[in-house]
Image 1 (spheres, rainbow, N blue to C red):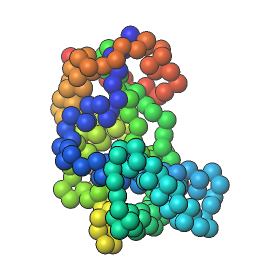
Image 2: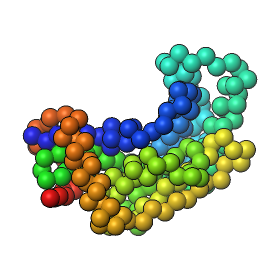
Image 3: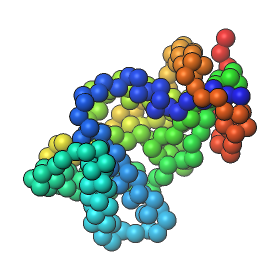
Image 4: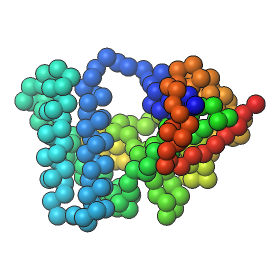
Length: 225
């Protein structure tokens, strides 16, 4: 048996919530929209009108999510969010993420001492250049600590890969991507993180049969004292 957690379960403990669900909904809708853009661009090589198709998908998803969370938005606010989506979509189209048609990788699992497992899945992976990308729809200045912790776990799952965080500050008049390159952690830092993950998973992890937990996922194993 493995005690298993997902990366977001650990990282959520370090997020400072403001109580406003709008930001959460907007981020989710923007992220989902551009991920679909890359998928369809990769699979069908669609370039014509993809921005308009993406905007239509975004607006439908946004309305649905607002309704699901009982958030009431007036027409003026909705127009603002539509404009935000349009700027975001076009900024994303100019990024390396879209140009290289990068996709989400299959979820990997990090195991520690064959006792615990942590599911990890960064937003995009470039196997040609060995780079993992995490995308955020907000400013990275300063870089939120929970984002750093999230990406540190992804680095455990993708040893020997370079790491890039790309931020698209959605509230700015002109969205200019921000690039943060995160170097590999020192060995001491990595061991501290592994010990923290181990303790957390042992306490809060879900018991799953070892073979079932691994499945056909790539497994990256670590051992700690």
